[in-house]
Image 1: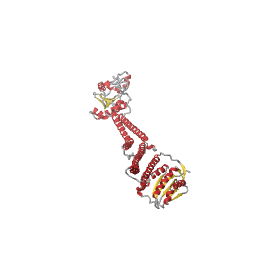
Image 2 (image 1 turned 120 degrees about the horizontal axis):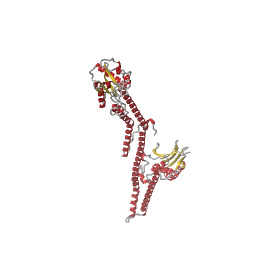
Image 3 (image 1 turned 90 degrees about the vertical axis):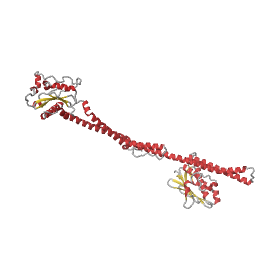
Image 4 (image 1 turned 135 degrees about the vertical axis):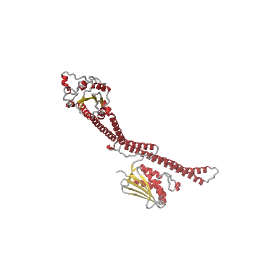
Length: 527
């Protein structure tokens, strides 16, 4: 059975896995884009410096609009989803983070807010950063009023060059819980309200990989697990589900067949390896069913043969036993003629038993292939002449005429001459038994495109339709009175076995003009 590649289970599994991988890659790409967008949304500025300036400007505007603004609530609501951690350090000592941060940061920032020199220093977070003239800090664009930020906001770097002290940084060493070489917080921006520096926005290190995982890990894991589950379910239902279901059907059919249900068959739809397996199983089941039925038929035939043989042999044995016991009676006085008649009957029954046993052995050898069939070119006319010679005396005594007809091209056949003659002799003898005195027997040979037909026809009463299906069975006799005729009841069975060993067939029918006709169909002789 040739499978189309697109119906092959191998390719279905391969394409299913490819589709599953494509689905996973598409889901991961979408997840990556979603995560990137979230991260980008959490970092609205292009750089930490600009982000600090934007937050400081936003807080300055909000405080200018509402001096009693709840800074902690505002920062949590507006910047709680921002990955970048920062501190809002007010001049009055309040420190508000947008995330949970180590206490060391908050304590250090609160301590620094009490020192104006440190608080206002552009080196608020150490020597790596700071804001000076031209850095985009909006504090330089506000007018100065009473108590405004000292002039060093505009000239912080110059003051450093002149030897001025900008004040000690809050974190001159590594940040809390950070080892040497790690990034230290260094970006900040002043929160200016009405020209006054009211606080600072100080960026903390981050966001780190741990922060990103902590923020997006649960949602990413849930989404990835959902995609994996959906993909696995789809592949299981689309690729493996139908295959498992059909394999289950094959398994059930196998179990039913093993339990003795010879009608068990597996569905063959699908066109893949499973359907090929089901087709092979069904062929095996058909063969096993055929063999089981043949064995059952053979067993029935064997039982019937034993019964028939026992019956056929019991009749002559019973007769022989009765006459022998009669002859053995010492008190019974028999004349010579009667004794001779009894001995003749015993002899005839003995011969009958010999014929029955001989025919049984012959039939067993023919049906079991125990005899070797010769393959010769046999003249049909020679077979007809041998049959006529064998029955010439009986036909003459009963005034039965024998007609022979051989059509052109039907003169020869390939086969065993002795066995073919035996088949014709049995058919002719059977026809003579049913042909009345003064009747006619006819032997005819004809041909068609591929076969030779040899017919034996009599002018008897014909064969009753109810007997035609059983006419070639062992010991089957249409007329029970034939038991006394000496026939064994195996002649037609032997004819059928001989013809089938030659690769042919035989049929029985009633002729249109009356009488029975037996037709042997044999393969034509090769050129």
